[in-house]
Image 1 (tube, rainbow, N blue to C red):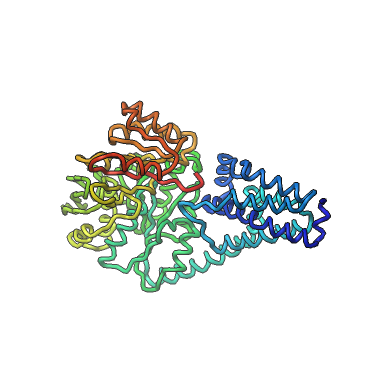
Image 2: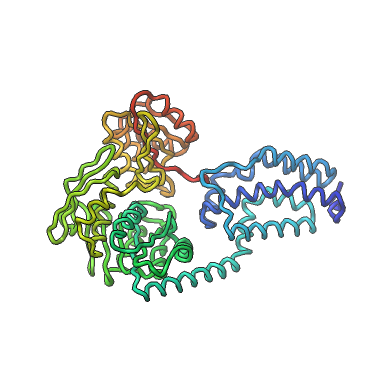
Amino acid sequence: MNTAIFAFNWAALLCMLAMLPAAFLTYRRSIHMYQLCSYQNPSYQKYLRENTAESFSVKRLLPVALMLVGCLWLWPVTLAGAALFVLVNPIKKGKKELVWTDRVKRLTVTALVIYLLLSLIDGLLLPLYIIGMPYILMALAKINAPIEKRISQWYVDDALRILKGNVDAGMKIIGITGSYGKTSTKYFLKELLSVKYNVYMTPGNYNTPLGVTRAVREGMKPTHDLFLCEMGARHVGDITELCEMVHPDMGIVTSIGPQHLETFGSFENIRNEKLALYRATKDKDGAFLNMDSPAIAEGSYDGKVTLYGSSEVCGYRGSDITVGAFGSAFTITTPEGETVAFKTRLLGRANVQNLIGAVAVANRMGIPMKSLVPAVRALESVPHRLQLLSGGGDTWYIDDAYNSNPEGSKVALETLSMCEGMTRIVVTPGMVELGEMESQLNAEMGTYAAGCVDYAVLVDAKRGEDIRRGLLEGGFAPEKIFLTDTLEKGLAFTRTIPGPKMILLLNDLPDHY
C-alpha cells in the first residue's frame, strides 16, 4: 500500500484515528516534562539530552517502524503498530502529575491541528510526528508564543491593577527571598503577623512573575493589610523583575547559597541577584538580612537594614539555642536590649534562624515580643521542610523532601545527627542544578553525612555514586550504604532495619531528573 491511501478514503481515516492515541501518549509525556521544566526550552533541552530513550527506545521505535511500513504497503500493519505503541508505552504515574492548565490545553489544540494537517498532506508524516514529538513540542510552543505572551500580559496587568488598588488603600508588601528558608520564613511570618494584621501570602511555591500574578488575582482582597510575596530565582534578573512588578516596601533575604548554579552561571550571580531585594527596599521600610548566611555576612550594607542571626553584630540576636529530635528552644535579644525566650515544636537550627527573622520583622511591625511567644509555640511545620512525621510505632520521619541545595542539606543532616537514641537513616537522590560542581558537591554532602547518619539509602544511580564516594571518604562503613533506583525500594530497605529509627527524607527530585 502506498501513500495514496491517505487520499482521504476509509483506510486513511482508520489509520489516522488508530495512530492518534499513540500521538497523544507521546505528546502527554512530552508536555508533562516540558511543564516540569517550567516551559523553558534550555531546561527541557537538557532533559532531552540526558534522556534520549524518551524518543529512541526500542519500545517506541519498533511500533513507529510498523506504522511506517503499514503506511507504505499494508494498512493493517499500521493498526498493529499503533496498538503495540499504546500497549508498551502506558502513561507513567509521576510524583507531580501533569496539570491541565489553560496553557497546556491551548498547546494540545495546536498539536492536534498540526496532526490533522499532516494527515492531509501525507500519512507517512504521522509516525514521524509521533516519534519526534519530544522535539517538535518546542516548535509548537513557538507557534503559540505570541498568544501566550498576550494572555500572560493581560493577567499581569490585571494583577498590577489589583495590587495598586490595595497599595493605594494602605497595604504594605514584604518580599522574601533566599536560596533556602524563604518559604518557611513566609509561613512563619504570616502566622506571627496575623496576631495584629490581616495578612495574605503567595501560596505554595508561587514565586515567579506568573505565580505571583495568579496569587494576586485569585486570593488578594481589599481587606488585606500586608502581602507576603515569596520571590524565587533561577536566572539572573528574576528577583529584579519581581521587585519591579510588586515594588516591595520591606525585604527579607534568608540565605545565599549555590542553588540553581547551573542556570545562574556563577555564585556571584546568585549573590547579586538575591541582594536585589535588599537594594529595592533599603531606602523604603528596610531590608532584613540573615547574618548566619556566610555569603550575606561578608557583605557591607547601607540604608535601612536590620541584621538578624546569632552573631554579635545582629540587631535581633539569637542565643541559648537548643535543638532536639522533637523541638527547639532559643532566646532573642532585640536592638533595644529586651530578651525573650521562645519554644517551638519546629526542628533544627535552620528553622530557628527563620524564626529569628520572622520575629524580627513582626516586632518591627509593632507586635510586642511577649505577644509573639505563644504564636511561635503554636507554629506547625511547613510541609516538606524539616517536617516531623510519625511513621507509626517507633519510626519517625523528618520530611525535608523539598530541599535540594548544599547548605540546606547540611542543616537537615545536622538535625538528624541530634536524634540520639535512634537509628539515623538518610534517604536521598542527591542534589541537582549545580552545574559543573554537581558531582563534587554531592560527594561533599556524602562526606558530611558520614558523621551524621547510621545508614545511607541512595536512590539515584548517577548522584548516588557521588554521595557514596563521599561517604566512604568520610570513613563510613560500606555495608551501611544501600544504593537503589527508586524511592519505594529505598523505603522498603529502611523497614528492614530494627529498633527505633529517625528517617530523613532529603530531597525528592521531580520526574524530569
